Image (tube, rainbow, N blue to C red; front, side):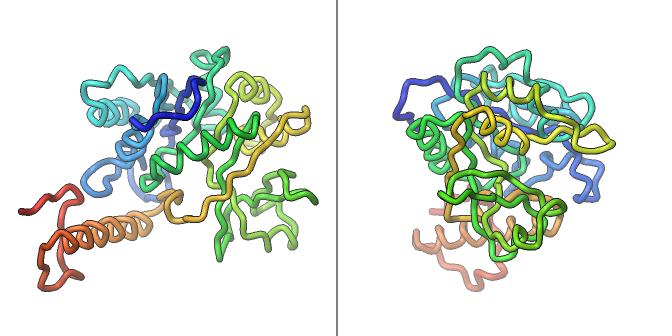
Length: 283
């Protein structure tokens, strides 16, 4: 495990309840495989590499299969994970609320991840946790800048470049839509303050969905500090939403594996048409 610089307990919450309708599949999105492993396994592995107290996984669609994938990844450390069920998928805020009984009175820091961000690096997550504590924040948001941010929630900053709000594409003004900095969906929270703020989140639409993106503004309105951690590698924290995304990420992993093997002295006659397991060891 990568040691933290501080003694504060860290819990991790992975949101993995959704079906992922844009995948056009009856299989839950986080069960689709990348590099021979389910997406949720990649995220679980990164979370477990941190110096954590507990990993909480919010499950819903195909809950038993998702739980099994997490347990397989953790192996002998499977007891490090606890599963909570989101019976109805009513938004990211509602997903976090599902873990309330287990977490609401915890004095921990809570790292919130989506189960569909397989390329995120352990070092990046640790830097976010460290940044959160160094700034004494109630909430820290990992952001990135995109050349084409259409469809993503924009990070609106105030006159001093601090947090103002997160605005979704459909609610953004023409000026706000020009903002290239977007919310990655990866957060650090002071756990108790998070669940207090969740009590104030209102349903966002007729479907009764609650959004986690409302929480930072609620905390800020109560005088809490919101920190923004701008990360430079947008691809690393990108989620997989479609089969096209999955194919693109598979190609990225394959190219990275072949590059590693080439540097180790392996010859490929035609690297562009070679298919090798990401775990391959040759020689």
